[in-house]
Image (tube, rainbow, N blue to C red; front, side):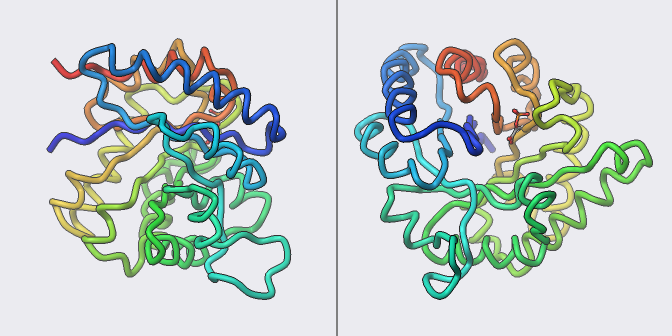
Length: 260
Ligand code: PEP
């Protein structure tokens, strides 16, 4: 099955609204060159801070760049001070939402069960979740990578149907590679991607496994993207730091293998 690659830019807590407008304008201009590459069939999405989403949506109108949020609350509304819900994200122009990023797990105590509730809530309102999984350095060094990723998948995807999984993206992001400049080798990333696909095949269905997109995230830059994206099981990238620079992000997008 051919999967449409996805290049997703996680801006984290960077950029105010004027800066957002500027970066979106730069990306929108560059997007004119993407179809000119002939076979480029990637989807591109950016994930600015919640306060900048509406400005980004306005700046990107009519351009082939999707919009998503970095987190959401599972309830549609209510007494949850400081939170943002799925229906609110939809009205801000989002199509996607990142869930369970390791920074949210690490700094905000997010659990697999909570991520699961958010994934179900996102799907219920029509937002596509990007569910993040990945091991710490200690877990990798003690040979527990597959065990940790399996636990995160089982918890995060609990109760999702095969139909739900059509709208889900998985991001494999080894924690030791995020923001550190230490990128996983193609062998390390490819191994975990194949493990994830195999797990989905067994736990859900072979069809869901062959259809689901699995992104790699962790210090992806313009100069390492091509090699990573050439692996047939790496269906795109979740890019942090390098997505804050229009040239770098554009070069990563152009690293997607072309359809012959
Ligand atoms: C991320 O934030 O998901 C990420 C992968 O960051 P970076 O590319 O900066 O390592």
